[in-house]
Length: 291
Image 1 (cartoon, rainbow, N blue to C red):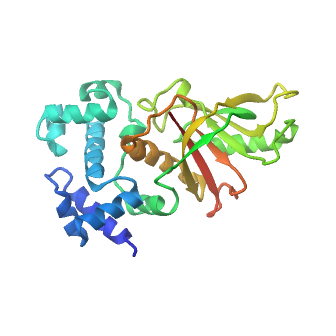
Image 2 (image 1 turned 45 degrees about the vertical axis):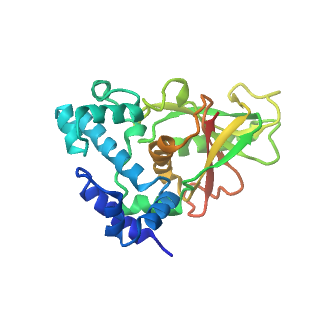
Image 3 (image 1 turned 135 degrees about the horizontal axis):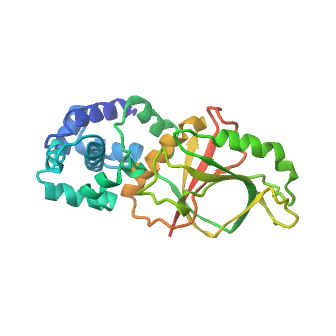
């Protein structure tokens, strides 16, 4: 059974009523399904329950209002379905780790606050182009040799970085036979998830797995991915929509998971399933470090 239409109807109802006292049962009724069946599909397909989506969308709207309007905090709270400034402040601090006042002062439109409305294109992306429930794996220590570049998600230069790397990658000795490629995000050295946004400049290493760094020319960067546990998401299709996948990971999964994040670097893994930057059937795995 295709539940996408029901999910679209549910989301339209939620967005229309976001500032009101929404009951999950009313959402299910608007979509034409029982609460049990709709909530189960909502969680399976979109990665969170209906109640969680409502709460996170209210907080995301409130976060935007704190940054881009001069409304009083009590008015922001009431506009987004909270009964008092106190209840709003508690819920806000639980998610964003700072008070609404501090968030407004910091002026950072972060990943964590980027839970946008699930419009039709984004809904299709979540249902067709990303595994919303990750696989948990343990990765052995892995050596990677590559080059380093700078980018933002808003002005993504990763394609150019990989083009530059591919032209000189044959100069790397001791390349592993499996030929796996790694795009290692080094943002965590200078930024936390609570300060990262689409416009923050970060460094990325594009490289391939090697058995040894012996004889590696000085132009290449040496990276060692330590052994550890990872939550692995698979992104399908063009890498132009990779930012949408990361927004889901940090704006939905991260806020709902019981897993605890680790300070190791996250990375993309490219293997034989990667068919090209814009190929509709291309697959890339995203590794998120967990304890």
